Image (cartoon, rainbow, N blue to C red; front, side, top):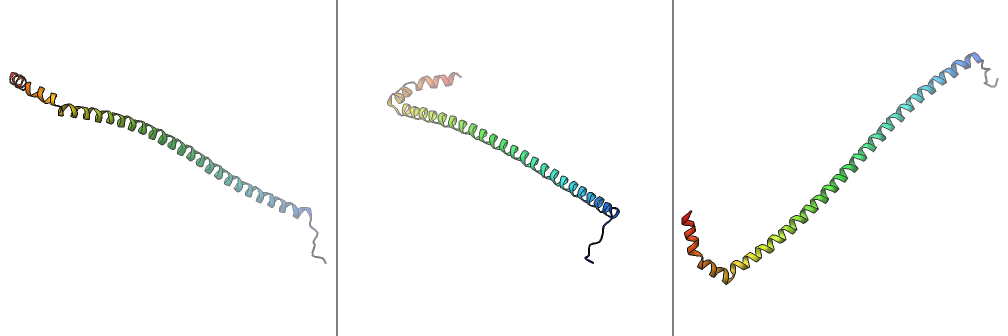
Length: 113
């Protein structure tokens, strides 16, 4: 004998049914894995969108802060220039002379209050 046994259609049908059931089970497992991967992909996409939005907000906030810093620096320069100008006025001889001659009037005003 050659080891090949004749297979009847009756014994072959349960084997085919078993293989079909096994294939369906494997298909369900594969579909479950595909669903998990799709969910993970969507979560990754949502995270990436959120990260991009956060980066955009940070960029906009940084731009606003830079603009405000520029305004403050310009105002500071104007303040320094005016302060220097006033220092020069207070150090001038005409200011000092005028202050000396106006001293009695200032004293009278204070007493009147």
